[in-house]
Length: 125
Image (spheres, rainbow, N blue to C red):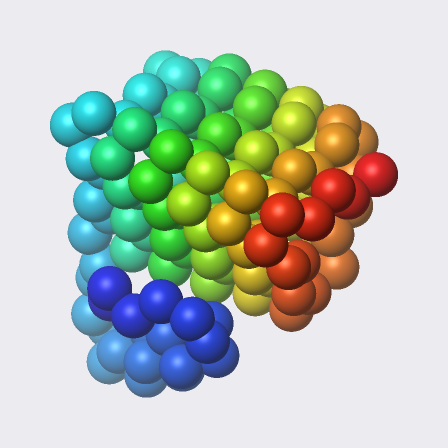
């Protein structure tokens, strides 16, 4: 499931295989830091040098690219794409199918709607 963007293609393939009772493994690169209190969903891929803080929940079939940071108490839904070096501050909610571009910064307590597209280098308050 290394299909990146658009999320819709990855979501459709995932759902097709799930209908046939296929189980996906999650992949977490050895250089990524994932807090013990965090949960990574089935089929998600965590790339090198990612930092995932305490009490973060990442849904199914989500990609978190290299050097991204997802801080404490945040939620990232199913079928999302977090691009390289994106920063997601604490207590952020990113709903299903959202795309967060490279170097984007989402300020604490923000709520990103499903299937949103956040451009690279954006600051979301």
